[in-house]
Image (cartoon, rainbow, N blue to C red; front, side, top):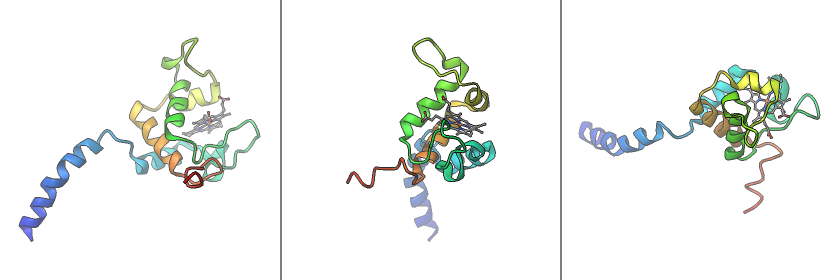
Length: 120
Ligand code: HEC
């Protein structure tokens, strides 16, 4: 039994070490909950409080990541960036990995924008 466990551990190690840089949906969920995103983007990030506040749930992960990154001042250039003051203030606290995790979590939510299942 001990030997089996050791073998499994060795087999799993490369997976664990590469996963360190992959997006972590659970961590993204924690960051979204702590970040108070539902205050504006609504329950399940799918029911915004105003028509000009976007729905997020189920949007593509890559789109969400780039949108979030674009709100950070350091990514703003005339060709690449968004200067919304609300979101700019919110994303200032996150590093790149946080944004990857947040994007992965939001993309996993089955909201109105989640169309991947229907496409198959
Ligand atoms: C105080 C209100 C408010 C809060 C809180 C808020 N947002 Fe936003 N968010 C907005 C508004 C308004 C926009 C649209 C800004 C624009 O026009 O670029 C937006 C846009 C976005 C977008 C871009 C969507 C798209 O389709 O381009 C993402 C992603 C996003 N928010 C994620 C988050 C996350 C993650 C949190 C929590 C950490 C959060 N927001 C908290 C108001 C808010």
